[in-house]
Image (tube, rainbow, N blue to C red; front, side, top):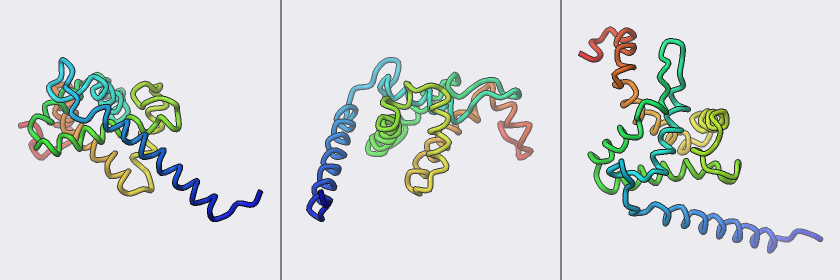
Length: 169
């Protein structure tokens, strides 16, 4: 069978429709969804994603054995959402849900349910992506969580030793 322009247009339309449907499902899953305890603005799924993302962003080291997943950065982010305009909070939640769902076509499951090795691989790929907007979004989330990470009581003393500018005083 010869592939014609009509076949390519039909394939493009079908792919676009599938993306629209899956995107609509993603948005309807969280849009204005009530928060789950113990959060004030996040769902438990969003909290689970933030813990997984934080673990990939801030893995344990010999100097700092506390990993990002155990640092409570999901609660830091939840508090941060309480101080942002409503639209900004919704967009940040869209970012969380979008990144969490981005692994579904590749791995068959959301980011926070993948193994730590798979999470680390995707995290590295995304934060070094050649797609500017995608890389920027992933790195921006690291930056926001990094504010909570660097001020964590177990991390701040190590940060203070690295910075002679009066960090933490």
